[in-house]
Length: 531
Image 1 (cartoon, one colour):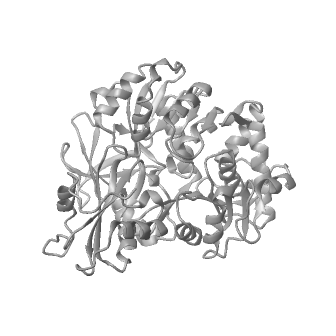
Image 2 (cartoon, rainbow, N blue to C red):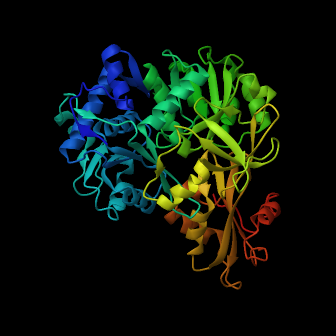
Image 3 (cartoon, one colour):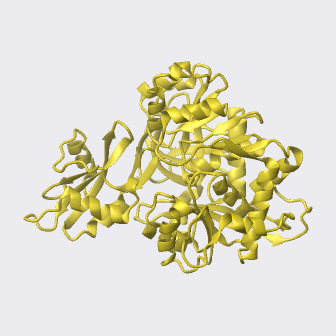
C-alpha cells in the first residue's frame, strides 16, 4: 500500500520515480515532444508534481481512482504520471466512447476524479450524471464538464512544487485498463507499477533501446495499452517520447513528424503502415535516423510485411504480439526473422514463459493448435472487482490468453484463431456480445449475431446478421445504424447489416458463426453498407 513516509526512504522505483531521477540527472534534456513543442525532464517533473498536489488538495489520495478522458497530448501524459506520483490508480478512458460507456467506466472503477479535454467535456458532463462520485474534474483547455469542474492550468498554477512525501509500493495497482469483455461489459485489467516497469525493461533488453532513442507511438492513442506502454522505455532511459495528435490518421503528416522529430522507433497498426507505404514521395524522405519500425494490434498480410521490409531497409521490422492483461507484449518477431518466419508472431520476450495447451491444460504436441497461456511478472494483478473472472483467467496457475496458436519446429508461434469471440478492426477490439446486446434491444430485432468479415483497410470489419422480430416488418440498415450510433462508440458500429430469416444453429441451439462467416465472407449482403 502507499503510505506517507520520508521521501528519502529507499523503495522500489515507479514511473514517477524514474521521471524525478531524470529531472535531477538531465534536467534540460527533452522528455516529450508534441506538435513542435515539448517539455524537458525538469519541466515535466514540476508539472507532474503540481498536478499531484492539486489532486491531493482536492481530497484525492492513496488508492483513489483518477480517470483520464483526454486526447493525445502532453497533458494526458502528465495526468498519468501525476496519478502514479500521488499513489492513486489511473484509469485511462477511450475518448471514442459515448457518454453511457464513459459512465460505466467511471462507475465501475469508482473514480473520484477526472481529467478531461475540453473537446470531450460535453461527453464527460453527461457521463457524470450517472457517476456522482466523480467530485473533482479538471478540464484541459477552455470548457466546462459539469458542476464543479475547474481549469486544469489554473489548478496547476495554484499548486506547490515541493516534492511529495509519498512512497508507492511497486506491487500496488498503477493503472486500470478497460478491455471489453465477452459478456458485453468491459473488464478493468489491473496493472501494477512492477508489471509496467518490468515490461519496459524487457522491451529495452530484448530490442536494444538506448537513451538516444526518439520513440513515436502514433499507432495507438495514449488511452490504449500500446500507447501507455510505448512511452515507458524512453522514460526509463531518459529518452524522448514523441506524441502524435489525435484525429484521423494522416500518413504524409506522420512522415513529416518522423522527419522533423528524427524519430528512431515507431509503432503503427497495419492499416496505418499500408497508408504510409502509399505516400508518393516516401522514397525521397530523409528517414536515415529510423532504426526500428514495429506493428501489431491487428493482422497484417505477408504482402504488406514484405513491402514494409523493402521500404525501410535501414530499419529492423518488429512484429509485436500480446494483450492488455500482459502489459501488453508477450512475443516479438525481429529482423531477419521478419522474412524467414513471415506470418509468425515470433517468440516470447524476456520474463515471459508460455505453454500451448488443450482444454484440460495438457501441453499439445508442437505443430498442433492449442491455447497459448502465460506466466510472467508482467501479467496483470486481477480484473477490477471481478474475482470470478480473475479466477477463470488464472485457472491452472497460468494466465489464459484466449488466443489459439501453433508452434513450429523452431519454436516460433503462429496465431490460428481467437478463442474469445472478438473482432479486431483497425487495431481496436470489438467484442461481439457488447454489440449484440445493443442490437438485441431494438424493437424490430428478433435475434442477432455479429461476425468479422475481411476488410481491405481495417483487416476485418464487424457485420451484423439480424433476424427480424416480425418478418413482415424487418429493420432497415438506416434504423439499425442510428440505433447503434446513439449507444456505441463509432468504431464498434457494424459496417454492414444483413437481414435474414433466421440464424443458423446447431442441435444445442448455439449460433453457427462459422457458417455465417462463410456465407458472408464473399460480400453476399442483403442490406447496404452503413457509411
